[in-house]
Length: 206
Ligand code: GRF
Image (cartoon, rainbow, N blue to C red; front, side, top):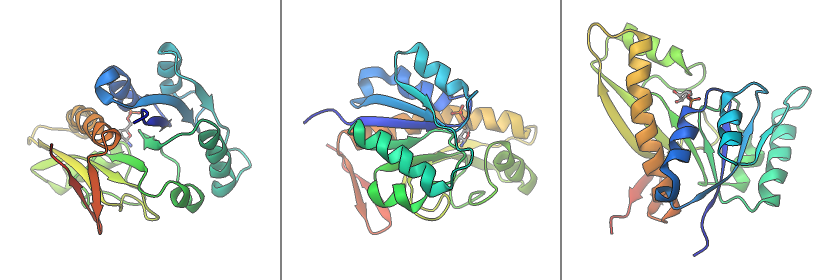
């Protein structure tokens, strides 16, 4: 079986991307392309430092579907099998979802269905969790569908929330879990051990 070719979309610092890069051969798939909608995204620098093709695709003056059509051309030309949204803060349009149904994985820094959906991104997620007073939080990987943060859940990881925690300290705790479950989720996809049953995901154990 030829290795799964992965494209990673980033908008910011790229620590999730870095965790995939650091996983190396363990991932069993190949990170072939990194694309960002932000010219100054540090994720692009991480890709460059690791010899991975990286592109800033400027969204200026383009509708979401025009932008995603350009993304689709990049992916088709490179025979991309899997798209990973690693801190990518731009809406994915039906253009891409239809072409890559159940082949787009997103990481979200909460235990979906809590603190997710429109407006819940970055530090805002952790501010809401702290304010609500939850005792546990965590991260979720899921397949992307037409709604925000609503596709079939692949994996979740939990962290305890202490009374002293701030949104910033919680964000750091959750980021460590994100790196762990994102690598495991991508590896499971690349090994073909994920099965979607309705809106649930079964991870086939050997
Ligand atoms: C992560 O918490 C991710 O879940 C969220 O944005 C943050 C970005 O992290 N969508 P990084 O750019 O991968 O460091």
